Image 1 (cartoon, rainbow, N blue to C red):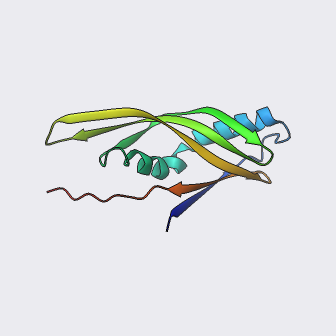
Image 2: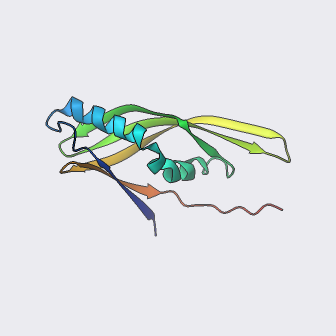
Amino acid sequence: MLEKLQLDICLKDFNLHCEQTTGTAISEKILTNKSMFHEYLSRITQQFDFKADVKMDTLKVEDVLLLNNSGVAKIGFAWDAFHDFEDIEKSNQLFERLPFTIEGTKAIFNLEMPQMHLVHEI
């Protein structure tokens, strides 16, 4: 069964009747509340490397697309990983789409969490 993460972002101080204003508000709120997305983004990066660490300071909202009361935020972010024993450092830039719906004065993100892969090191 897939684990879901629901994140609600309040938009009550914004004019939601204008598509451009709504997109800007969602973009700003994602960046000011980026810690809410940390677990989700960490799981995505760990699909590439089990020691990956998402660099939240690199999070950028590339675009917000709206259609009626739903949309998608296109984001970009970086991760890196260091493997002690091999003295290897890896890094990469990723892009992800965050679907959301707008209900009243909230943007609600229902995200399917990638499965965690537990790794046991000796």
